[in-house]
Image (tube, rainbow, N blue to C red; front, side):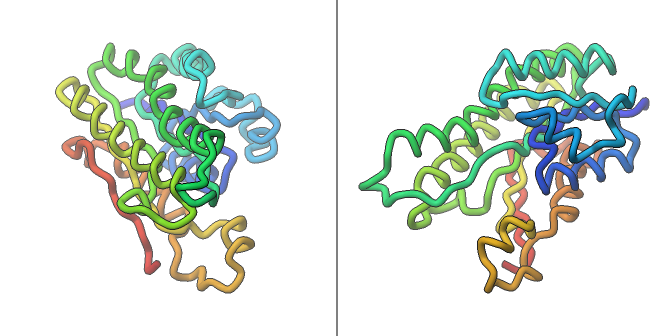
Length: 234
C-alpha cells in the first residue's frame, strides 16, 4: 500500500507534535491543521514547502474551513485515509448552578461540534474510497462529573456519544471510528498548572500518539465505537 494520508488537527500542540513525529516515522503523508499558519511554521519549519506534507490554517468549528483543509489533502495526495482529531479545549469553570451560557457553548463548540465539522469534511472522501479511520481525543473524565468542570466534562461526553454514533453509521462502509480517553497528559502547560504533582505518573504525549497511530492502523480495523482509556498511573 502507498503511504497513508493522515489529517491531524491541533497539530502544533504538544500532543499534535508527538502525533506528527509518530506518523512521519511510518512515512505517512500529513495534512497538518491548526488555527494559525504561524503556529505550524514555528512547530515544523522543516515541513514548510515539503511536497509530502501540507500545512493548513483552519477553524475546526467551521465546516467550510475544514472542507477546504481536507480538499488540500485530496489535491496533494489523492485521498484522506485517516483523521486524527486532537484540537479541542479545556477550562475549569463555574459550578453547574453558576454556569454561563458562554462557557457552555465554548466547550461544546471546541470539543463536540468540532468533531462534527471535521467529519463533515473527511467522511465523504472515505465513503468514496470504501475505507478510512477516524480517531478523536476524548478524556477519561468524560465518564463522570467533576466539580468545576461541568461544561468540559459534558462536552467530552458529548464527543464520545458522537464517536459512537458515527461509528454505528459508517462501520459497515469500511470506516473505523474511535477515541482515546487520556487522563493527564505530561505537557509543559500541565506541569506549570500543577507544579506539585508527580508528572511521572501522567501519560507522555509519545505514548498517547502511539495509541492514536494504532487506532488508525489495519490492526485496529475491527475496533468500532470504542474509547481507549490511556491513563498511565494517574
